[in-house]
Length: 236
Image (cartoon, rainbow, N blue to C red; front, side, top):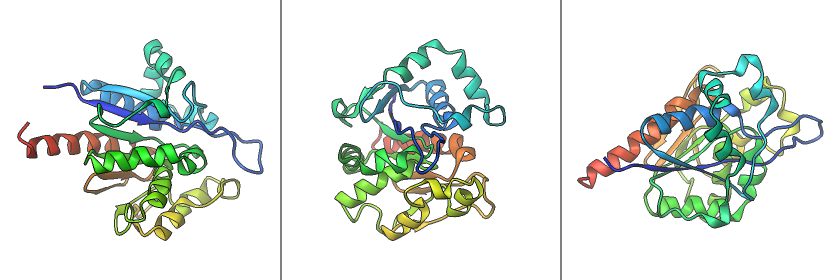
């Protein structure tokens, strides 16, 4: 079987608003999918808008948030090197890749949502009919894509970190907007789990979204399954 190439687009935004709290990539939302892709034999490429090392949300390093994949990452010098040396977005094109994965952390609300390069990359993946998965606050990256092409989110079933979850983590006053609200305003059909902080993944064609960190593994697995389905339909 041919090796699959997965591009992971990470936030590099560090600071919340009106507080000393920092944000960045939520560690488990990166490490859980990263190792699912590696263990499936995929090649994974990491990219941020400017390149280099993105910040990790300090809260995601706390004991209660440490996952098996986080511990694996802390012992994985090669993975740490790749995270410290992400490619710059301007140097990346979709052509070599089979799928795109966008982890969360609150950071995407700022940088990925406002980046023309990010929006264009997502639209190019979509035009090439390559699956795109985004997790938690990762779907904020869809907002620029929807600004460039208003049909992108129109009528699409998506999920993300919900307004209820935002209130429960007490960061509601330190973010520029609530993602659930804005996705709905862009025409998306928003879905979520009945209970906050339980796993929920929504699949609408080539768009795959996960609600929260507990949805990370299922979101990554769903991306791989969608890639396999598309290849099977083409007779690969």
